[in-house]
Image (tube, rainbow, N blue to C red):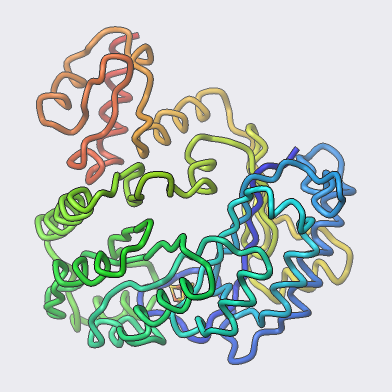
Length: 386
Ligand code: SF4
């Protein structure tokens, strides 16, 4: 039975300077062609043996207990409202959405209008993840974003007026020194809009992006590690003081507003993904679709599975993943995973990277900053202790 469904919408109007996602840049989105392909993939999955079946009646009146549906991208808000309605009707019985399913749409501010917001609400969308990134027009231009700062506040007010109150803001930190971005000011602007949730992304340089080229030819330079750390920790202090709780390395929420969908990923629960580049996980095996829209569309049109590859996790990989995911979140890792305190674990406790809560070990913000190194050290600790 599928409780968590992800649908990937690959279209964007342009490529942001830091983005290496497999997107399809389109001025006009082929909405009905896309919806047809995704619903056809759902039919193919229903008929494929041996894999969690999202067709366990999401269309039927006795529909499955779907808890979350997440439309991510790309830019899902580019889908024409009627295509989005058709997609949701095809995926999930409308009665099911009324029973408290969390339905998230990733949106860019410029796509939020009174008409689109009303149509999204009517289609069953009850949570928006808004790509704000910064409230500085210079910075947004540098990022190749297609909105200006004023549109972010307009979008939040428009969504609320349409009855969508559960709004998350995405923000990017760790920008090049030369931009002289005022991170504290951006956090103030974000908090003034009273979002229910904030997601933070530290800028990374991905190969073959405009940012990568700018850095290669010396036109820009990323901040030193200590400034990256200062900005991350400043966000923790500001958001925590404003009533948020960090429940994952990059995500903070007000009470009752954690992303139920992403929390399912982080607790290792099964999910099904549809659309190009979408991943699925049945608790043991993970598989993923062809990333390029045209190749995905062709596969579906020819009645072929769009799955590009799959891997089955070994018991050891699953254990490593459980620890990694636990440390990413405030759930932490059960204390009995570390039967005896070893020297490396003690060192992490003394450094303030992890907190010992008796029954579990969890990351402190300083540990989240260095999560990969911390997981490696804890694995050494675990090996020594067992
Ligand atoms: S809108 Fe998102 S997915 Fe599209 S190019 Fe920008 S960062 Fe990438």
